[in-house]
Image (cartoon, rainbow over all chains, first blue to last red; front, side, top):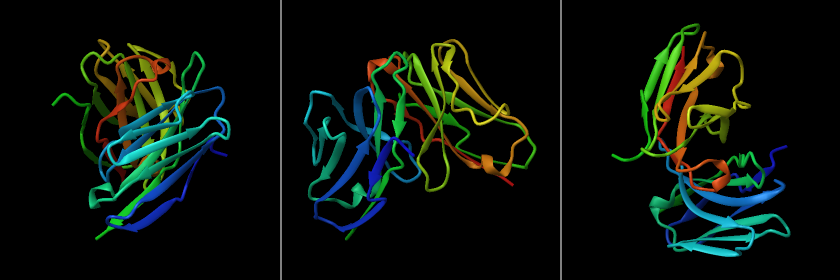
Amino acid sequence: KNQVEQSPQSLIILEGKNCTLQCNYTVSPFSNLRWYKQDTGRGPVSLTIMTFSENTKSNGRYTATLDADTKQSSLHITASQLSDSASYICVVSYNTNAGKSTFGDGTTLTVKP
Amino acid sequence: GAGVSQSPSNKVTEKGKDVELRCDPISGHTALYWYRQSLGQGLEFLIYFQGNSAPDKSGLPSDRFSAERTGGSVSTLTIQRTQQEDSAVYLCASSLAGRRAGQPQHFGDGTRLSIL
């Protein structure tokens, strides 16, 4: 079982609408959680990073939340645009000497006009 | 550009052949990572370099896979005796410091490998 579970697996919304993507993790000890955006045919690009003490962080129309107690994170996209169509990947890193990261399988978002 | 560069962008080869994939990280980045992404799947970690050393090779799927990094810069991922299940996109990423620093990984656009 993957230690980082994302939902939904895929999502279709209309342009201008909002959406929320979920990430649940069991990684322990926790160091940080990062959301990446991966456009088709491209490498992932970092959107936000959340550490243990942070609850909310925004990057333009993207807002990430973190509940370290329940080990859940969400990525909220406001006023979606066609260019938001991509895969969104949640990555959780360990707070150990190794600092290893575990990747979720991603949520594929399609924004339709 | 100043981003991570991977070559070739596409590679088609016959089963049983050896392939070499190249990654040029961002200048000054000490950490380098290789991942594999099969069609419609998530990223699968292969290997992590800190400088020229690879403290974590735990993701390499078999002894047909190997990687090296020289001069703290360019890295090459080699797959020997390729199999059809090796078909995937191979992504390289680099970060300014090692994994513990929590710095973002900057990814290249990958090499799409197809084994016939």
